Length: 159
Image (cartoon, rainbow, N blue to C red; front, side):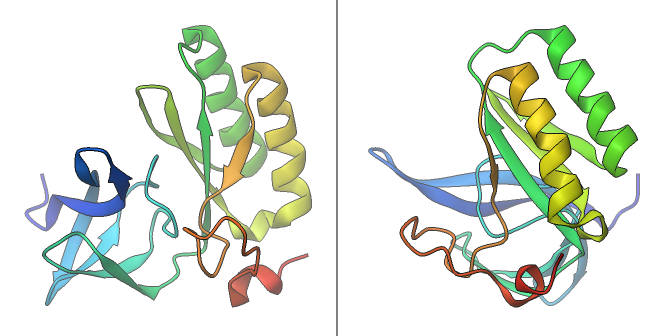
């Protein structure tokens, strides 16, 4: 294993027990800077291949967008065969990946070069298979303010 690969903990929200941190595989670059090796299933504003600066409390700053959408789906007790089917679809149609699945939270990566139309087309199929809605978790300027739908600059420039 490459000695630059590690697990980092990023801020994913708060619960009644306090701060929620999500563990993600990342490549250590330098000076608390990391390149993500997977899209998160809980944390918002990040995707696979993004470069971030990580603070000790789990807060992060996005240094460089990695060129991917992070799409999250929550489905209680999904059927294994359906998970395998949607993993195959996202890989075949978008050259994307299912980066993680834990406690009903699925994290997908899809290159932004596919654009919104093709990505929506594919994830509409996935939504129908899983019977669960999908969410672009890294396209909003303020991802934790669900009332604010202002897109980040790279997302405004697509399609």
